[in-house]
Length: 260
Image (cartoon, rainbow, N blue to C red; front, side, top):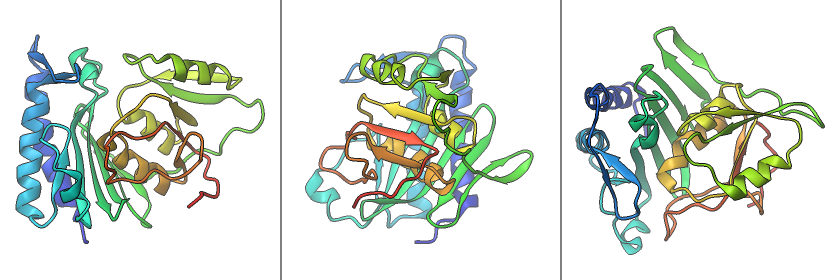
């Protein structure tokens, strides 16, 4: 499946404009979803824009979005290709106006991510990767290939991205045992992109996320030379599960031999 990066960039820029229109308001309205997570008008407008335009350019590929009703597993299991969309990853960052929110869009083929796009509205940056083609950052300065930093050895300092608004006891306990660390507070999928960009080293996640949170940054990190592996079995994450919740994982600049 040939995905045109320029078309995806235009789609995500269009959604970004709608997000930023709401972001500029002093007090954007915030509602709660059934799981008690926050949702804003920006989430919904971004979702509407991206889903409609993906259907226009790629009508044969179904879309799974955080903000849409999820088709049954019986239906989803028949798909070869599908999009995974988080139209606004980092809603709390959006609400608190940290600028650290993104749009995540990934293309999955038979359980494996084959293309990923992460757009940062406030900086107008696009991170993207296709399987086997490397990872890149597009910005006003041009196109730059992303590469991870060498993973720290022994007692060398490890740079660890952590959530600013989502502290989690098990994750904190795990990090406390990692030795010589520098904590980097950063929101949304930017934590994994920091690793892909060589600005961080390891990100453990011991609380559950959904497939649309990780798929796009996962392939970007992999194509930059890193990995996203399940915490205990050290297996690569796969997608299109019966449950869209992912197991605990570690994202890092280290790329070991993965189990199959």
